[in-house]
Amino acid sequence: LVQDALASRPDLRAAEIAVEVAGEIAGLAEIEIYTLTGMFDANSIGSRNMFESGPGTELPIPIFDRNQAGIARANTQLQRAAIRYVAVRNQIALEVRQAFARYQQARQGIHVWREKMMKPLLKTIDQANKAYGAGETSLLPVLDANWNLFIARRREAESVAGLRRAIAELERSLGGRLDLIPAKKRGEISE
Image (tube, rainbow, N blue to C red; front, side, top):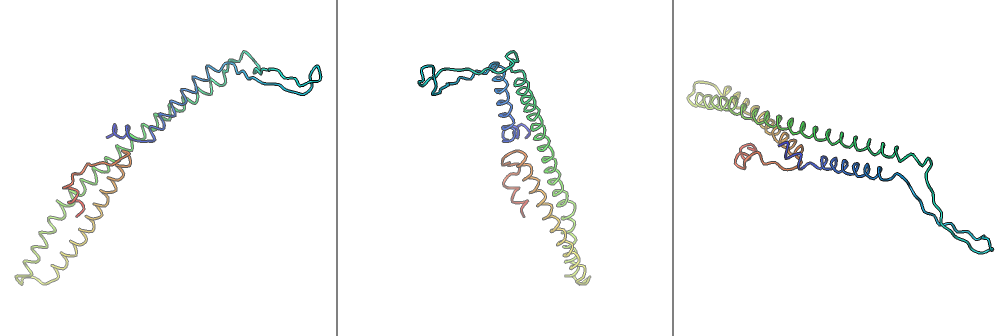
């Protein structure tokens, strides 16, 4: 899942592009040792009182600087972009692992709830209904068992909602849709 997320997350791709751009800027900074600016000087007063024009150049001072400041700045930006890329990559891996752990925990919680809580509760209701039908008890144990079933189903619905939130968080961390749950089980979870 981590590899899928690293392949599909747009924030990681943006960090990759930032590293590429910073690398290109660093390469250009090493080439830009001299900045040569061409000018065209034109004025109306010449040696013969006529219109005069001529070329000109502008060189930065000191000439022997060799653009060390620009190269250092570009290399620093490249290092920052590389560090940002590693940080985004690690953050994505962490988010996927945490989301998957929450998904597994929610899924296990629903399974335990259904097996350990709902099945015995349904047996209790069945026994209470049989005892009431046989005239052995009053209606109170039947109502109490049904109330407990209502509470249990509400908690089960909350657990299913927690599982759906965990799936949504996992899909967000992966950067796309995830089909971890087969279609048959999806229907069982939503019930």
